[in-house]
Each structure stands twice: as structure tokens, then as C-alpha cells.
Length: 223
Image 1 (cartoon, one colour):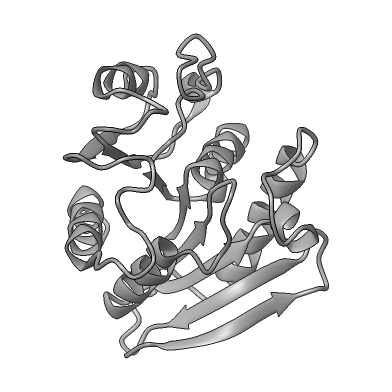
Image 2 (tube, rainbow, N blue to C red):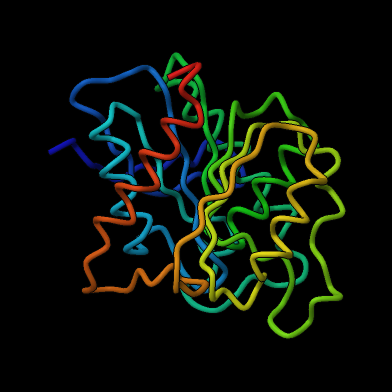
């Protein structure tokens, strides 16, 4: 099994804190995984994904976003987003010291949204995105779309979406992806909600295998 260790860089602000998975057979590429609004870097989905990507050769850093480093529980506040994006930028810089190849940003819900916003501001930061349950709008509020930055998103992006996700219907997410001028792909998970049906103590190996396989196929020209 690939090595896993605590990771902490306090020489930058916001600091980078999380868990680093070192692959036994590195492919040179790096993956950064961030969590949703009510979670942290120890989320079962992120942990299992990190193990699977590391087994495939990626150096993987699953990190606690800055707001979570300050508050162990609760969602991010209205003023946290910019600092959380700065934390992701610092995590990318840390990963570039560990991986010589491409750097990918992956995030569940809030973490994925902040990743897309960061890359819309500076596409050169990451070579591709893995977006798990992108929160297109708040539940039951389809008019409050979070897609204003999509026309500026120029990074190849794989979206993973549950067909019962209240944050976006299949039709809504398909329509939104047409706004992105980069290569995109939508992987749907039948019957899954916003958590992709990946709960603590519930086997999720099949889903994780499918996500990693779809990711490798999507970026096959490079990987």
C-alpha cells in the first residue's frame, strides 16, 4: 500500500495542512484533493480516492482548507472563500516541489467550486480538474446558479455527478458544462446524492475505481 503521512507547511499563509500519499511507483504527476463545506480532509471519499490515485502512481495531497484549519466544525463563512482559494494556491506550490509532471486539482462540492474559481482566475495553476458533486446551486434554489466564472474556465475538467443530487439536476449540469470553453466530461452516478452515496463504513470501491478509470481515460493523451 502507498505511504501516507501528515503534511504541514506553516511557512506560507494560509498554511497547508493535510495528508500526503506517496506512490510506490510514481508517474510524476500530482493530485490535490479538497473537501466539501461540512467536511474535512479525512472524509472517506477523499481518503479512498487518494489511496486509489496513489496506487495509480500519483502523489496525492488531501488538504484541510483554511477555514477548516481555523474551525474544526461548521461550514465556511461568507468571507472565507478568497482565503480558501489562496490556500489551494499554496497547496499547488507545495505539490510542485513533490511532483515533476502535471498537477491536478480535485474537490468535492465546495472544494471543487473553489478550485474552478481559482483556475478561472489563473488557468496556468493546474493542468486539469476533478470535480465531485459540483454545487451548481443551493438545493431548491435553481435560480442561484454558481456558474458566472465558467466561461473563463480553460482547464480540462471531469465532473462526477449523482443523478439524485439536489444541488443540480442532470439537465442543469449538462447545460452548465456547455459554458466551459475547455474539454469537459460528465460521469454520472446512478441513484447517488450529493455525497455520491459514499458514507463512512459503506464500501465505495466500485465508485472510486470508476472515477479513477474515467479520469485516466479523460487525460489519456497525457497520462
